[in-house]
Image (cartoon, rainbow, N blue to C red; front, top):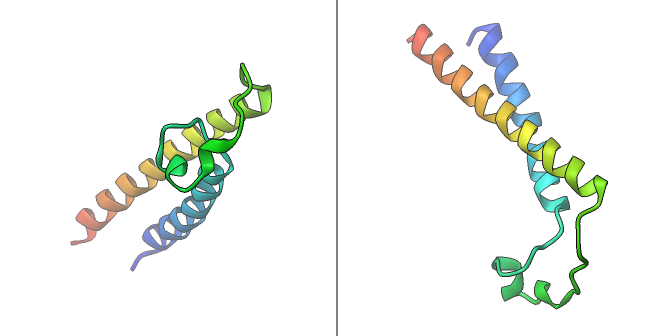
Length: 81
């Protein structure tokens, strides 16, 4: 393995853990799988706070970076094969 593949692989692992943590931090909106296990018993407040909007944006950014790393690894593996 070359150093770009190793570097992107490490970045991908870090982004995967970060993306998982950000997804788990989101509040349940109801109607999903969490309702099956009793997650829908919380009361929903109207509107979203600025922290939730920032968490949404960060989750999308981390998700796009994660996808870019996967595509980058695909290109690098194709180039070395």
